Length: 518
Image (cartoon, rainbow, N blue to C red; front, side, top):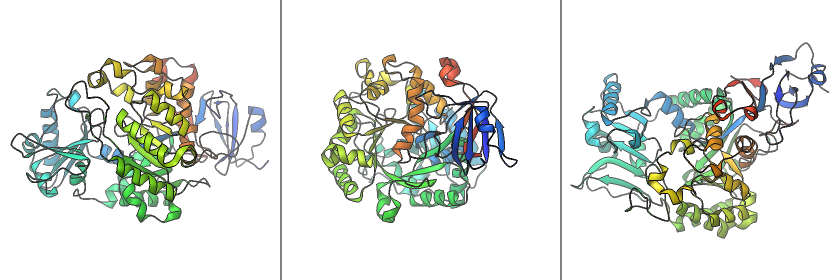
């Protein structure tokens, strides 16, 4: 056997999380797993040039993959105004005022993370609130990203006034006098987003900063939700410059499909660490913003059942295009109405063979009926879920009521039905730490305990299944011989940990392609 570049020994190495078969040592060569075995078997392969890593009895798992992350948004979230801990509108105003006081008069104040459920006033901020803080343009997104608030200066730059009509799939909220109050929902957010000045340099800095933070959490692969061609090109350039360590599976908006070369949008076959794969569609909004499309009204707002941001006809048209072009659809559907419609359109357009070949995904799949579960299983539709929503959505009973609560985040039911689950965070909506998601799926605080997953099931969703969902299962997701040497060294064995201890698991080392990156 050729001499390995790296040997890890004296560890508990789980090459496939679901099997729990363990090895003491691993040999790595040219960034790939070369062999697994006992300390004696592997150490005898070393040479003077082989790097030796004593794991000291720690646990080694395949590297984690976040199957739904907004990398640029996370980077900007880390570098702009973080409002996630704000507990009142007055506090938001103070922070906006302080931020703008250190910048030029025309500089935009950008922020994210406010949550009306946690604000003392229990309402959305408005333009009138923000106008009292600064005359600079202000644009602040709610934690879910499906609602935002802009001040008068930002609305003016965007050309939003009393005569502005709601865009398709969105809402410009008006006050009783018929004037925009600054609150924008769903596609209306884009009216302001598109006029916010962009800097390629800032974009790249944000992407690099975010990727480094994620590497420290053990994330070795990222399914990145892309919003623009500029973001896609920046990410591609950074990968070429080797400034981002993770493998990237880029999921692009439908508007970009025609601007890409046909060969660029195809399944990964050779282990390349940058790949444009799926196409993202938004069918509804979020439960937090009450814009997720439900079959029945919201319990705490009987006048609303949410909204579909795309019509059945529009979805069917894009699905037909996907069938002709052969690209994977990643459809954002949270409410049961949106999930039902997604399943029907995919079934009618592709059938089981087409769905399985292109590995279509429902992103979030938060409320799923038994009928839709059966169809998802029959068609082979993947459920791309975000386990930490379970912990964050403690207001869910208010939104849905006790009866519908049993259908919320039905992870175990979907798994038993034979639906493949792949896990992510939706960061910056949620904490990207995989162990926050793993703990949430295993403990399900405040929700139906019958829907808990085992540690092994969740680990598979963060590794092997995520690789399958990005067409890379032949070389990522497990630590079998011949696979890419992406792995994490942990400070404890998650299989042996209590619930409390599981959440506190820390990543000691992150190794990507055989190189220690954190």
